[in-house]
Image (cartoon, rainbow over all chains, first blue to last red; front, side, top):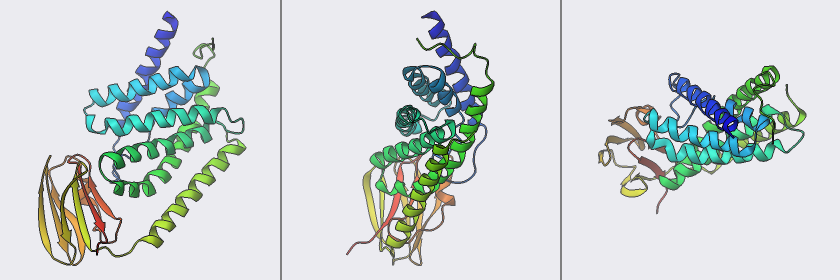
Length: 166
Length: 111
């Protein structure tokens, strides 16, 4: 139990740090909601090495805490919807044997875009669906990058860091 | 590094995006009304034929300009200024969104 809590804390910390670093690298492309999504590396890593509940928990807590800490409360509802949807879809996608980290990560990124846009459409106006034309291709590109990153991490991280699934 | 299914997923998602873009391009037509909402609440409707300056005061201040049938955000007090940098809109379905102020200006076609 203590080991599990420590592990969760460690990954939450890492994911938050990655999120923070990402806020320092703004993308001047003029599309709201466009992000690299680097923190998804941690979620992907957890999906492969731990239970789904851990991955989902780390993702939700990371989104909550980073939005509160780094002062972007406005985007919280969008990010949470996207984060939960993408975590669930990545969990299901991992059950498909033909998919590797890259495919799962691309699906996760695109579903994050769909989720956040749907939340914004509900809260603001359906007109925001128009932004999907930019968000989805960007999600595919960053999803491939994050997938490769997670693949490298999974290959090179010592088994010590990977918890035994109980 | 890549599994067979990964390539399939990438191609599928990109194909759907292209289909969506083509669909959106084919369906769009010139609009005649600019509908402004703040946090989903209707704020006002403005005819695109009339040149006008619309000052929107809600959670923040935005200045919309309609000129020659096109609308653009001239000024806003939001931190990111994404709405100000947005290209002018004129076709139905196009929209300028100012997330910090909750402002959505969407072009519609109304009789």
